[in-house]
Length: 180
Image (cartoon, rainbow, N blue to C red):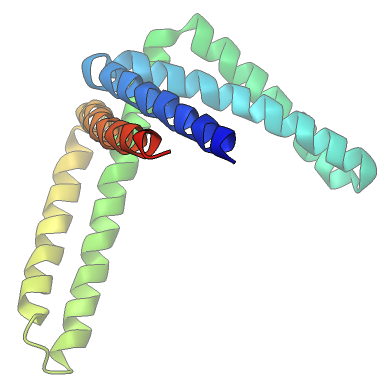
């Protein structure tokens, strides 16, 4: 039992350090991080396609077709990503920025809807929620006006979050290890 706990503790420490390293890359090299994520996505399509093929041979032709399409998409993605890294970074940066902007706008509309519903129940917080909803929509629109910058900033912010997460988990893992 004690050896299992030490093994878990070692794994937690390694994963924490890995999170810190990935966070540093995302913070200081966001374009490189976006490129790596894009390549991993292509690899994911290939692995998913292979799994679908294996599953499809046992179940249905749908999975075989889906597997072939996934593999082709993965190979095409990796080819494009590897041959044109600058296009990959710009494209994925823009996709991240647009997705984030749209998500914030949609959240703003949900907040406005919630505020209207709360007003009918005489909840005193409805006005504040309405203001936050309107602000969210304005922020979302401004993010959509510069989606690549938003994508880069988002990647850097995620890097900061990974660094903080890694440090907290590393401290937690070392503390856990000292108690076994």
